[in-house]
Image (cartoon, rainbow, N blue to C red; front, top):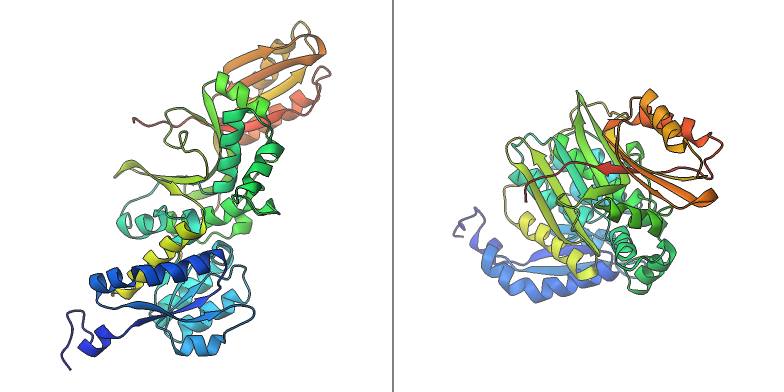
Length: 420
């Protein structure tokens, strides 16, 4: 047999590249159609023609048979079991694996990465983080030698759509959630998205890529968007801010911090203009300053495209693997700017008392907006950056003042900006 340029025999180069597909829901069905539509172009590019050699669903297919007749396994089942078992078995049998399963990676990533390395196979997961936004590939490959300092991400299309609509229309959270469900951007049970847990899983994965540290989803503090109001967004607009659910992974001293929270952004931040169901990731490093990647974050065809991109990458040696984790402590106390909304009785000295408490905790006020009269007054403030513990202590003291009519509403403010 005549060796091919890639080291395979000519017969091997001409043989189909067999893909075992686990799961045939919205994304799985779109992936199978896309493989068939793009097979000619992929064969012309890499020398082998991909084909779906078997499909496993709840009602059809046998995993052992699919595994025996595949070169690579695509896992689109969701959940952690039996997905974890199947992925480990596939890699143990020398099969490359592509998955879009963020929960699997954020809970069992180190076990899976170890299995890929020990078996000399590829584990690819671009679609697990931000749809077609190539954040995983860029961080794992293009920026592998860069010293990444910080990653910010709008990594959940559902919440970004809801917040964008609240800002655009002035509608309530509940109304915009219903619209998202009607358009297919939100599930019937949207808890995973609107609570911030979906974004937390994705930020755990991005932190592993950025810093090499093992981060479990349960180590990522996260806050959702359920409590946000159209009034907050209206006041923020007056202060030149927009509201997004943002995940952050950053170096803090000798450790790292990873979290997900609603965040106000100033207009010249790269994430401020990302609207609708789009996702975006900003990556900061001394070597590159900052780059922003953005694109659709949800949808069957978009996710399927990212999955197929991983399949094509796995068809081309040499294998790409995630290196072993390094030991970095997770830091819980970080510094941030904050927005605070108070409902107060309109009495003389109210602002002075609030400012005095903030000053005692070392909190400096950047801007103030006052509205209303009598017992229906509003006091909206934005702080300069401060350690979160000191600000929270001030808020606890303020909430006990007799003129404060309800719980203070607090939202982080990301002051960081870049030249556009």
